[in-house]
Length: 118
Image (cartoon, rainbow, N blue to C red):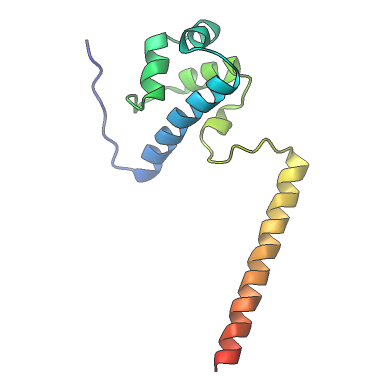
């Protein structure tokens, strides 16, 4: 029996699901696993993994997400974020500070340009 495809109105949820689907394939391939191998390792049906990777599944259980993440030696949150960077917490803090500094520089340049145009 075919699964009923759910349509989500909430764009943020839809974007999270698309990100998860895309990341699953990326992380599985990086680990050198086939869909069948990941299914055996995670305890999730190969058909479910296939549906997720092909963006046919739009309602994924947290238990599925955590089982797949664990099998791929990843944190579940890594499947929901856009960044593929593997940063340590100290590096994340440094990157965040650098981004904040760049934002301040951008604002200063914009303000200076605005002042000079008057």
